[in-house]
Length: 143
Length: 145
Image (cartoon, rainbow over all chains, first blue to last red):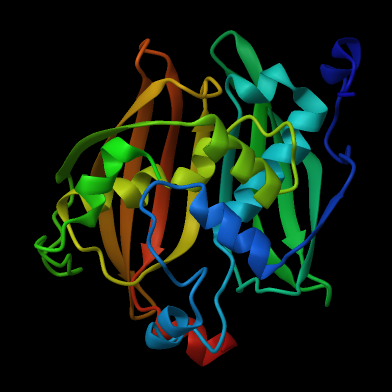
């Protein structure tokens, strides 16, 4: 159940969407990579590849998984508005690995004129179980 | 893995892409694949979102576009921008075009910026993604390993 249409235009800076928590496992990371088309073992799936790349002793989750979580938060709130015209822009600050727990946050930041409409911009961030931010950025929809 | 993409990405005789040789504005060409229902379901399981609209996020259109022409070498994404236009429909063929839009060095680390645009067989614009690849992956291990 998303935000009612009559309420969307009344969202003001500071409004927070419900947070979303995800537990990261290597099995989910592997499945994410297997949903692609290149079929290659990589730094997200293979400890040897991660080690050879100098990333550490274990694979790191693709930052795109965080993009997917942001998409889930925004889809839950805005549905079709996210599907047709949503944007995200994330900077990845630190690695996410098997066993981490991420919580996604989104807080309305500003409204920006765009064409004949208004784009509602959220500040978004992901925190791990230690309270460290793993990604920060924005997500937006046309309202 | 989509059958029509297997041969494109499996070739081992491509030149290795180096930061020095990457050309801003270089066209990476295009490729096609068919998003399968199985792919979509695997993606939804992987992100624990049974209604996820854009399984194409995991296809990594930008990184895949780079692989059409090059053996890309190691990189980690420092930043990713996405624009979502229309959810992909499983069973439809998707054409991806890519290009190198920028490259720069920041704090002694080299970055390549790759943009890819995906359109389905009916001409529906699906998504556009821009990723900022940091190509000195050992920096991740030094700081966080």
